[in-house]
Length: 251
Image (cartoon, rainbow, N blue to C red):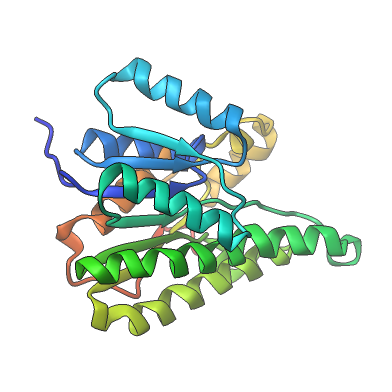
């Protein structure tokens, strides 16, 4: 039996064309939401939309590809979503890039790219979303953090630093926006079976799995389920939380 946990809700999901983002888009649609998925390029957005429509032609889903560090483009995209669906209830700031570059090899270009995608986009999308949510008297903002936001990683320091920033935004905005009845939370995935992880050789994956108490890596649906809970009325009294979904891999 399908329970429509998000019936008639409208969600914007950035980084929604593949991996965790795409699985979250699909799960939200299955639970009655209307979804605008944001991607980095028109072709990837169209590919994701075609795949979803092949699964269910009745899904109410649209795709856009604004530059996520450009406030004007973001505002124009949100306006299109509002004009299409009439309200904006949920924002998931999922778009992000990872990095394993050693400190002394970092370029300013890579540094700026990580800041723009992983931090600035979260800030700008949240800023643009709030007036819509304020007008209707409620809303939900959810951010994709990471297990490395809790304890760092041995190389690529700007990736965990950016996710530490996401956690700070999450906790601070939860306090700032509470009076507007806007909840703000984050999900911190552990090692998850995305395209990048699936491409790793067996000799790299197996030692990683041994560090996880549950003895397996996560699947995108595991993370999507966490977003579904936090977006739904079941989490009506939950805000300012960083929900770790990592199989207890906390060492």
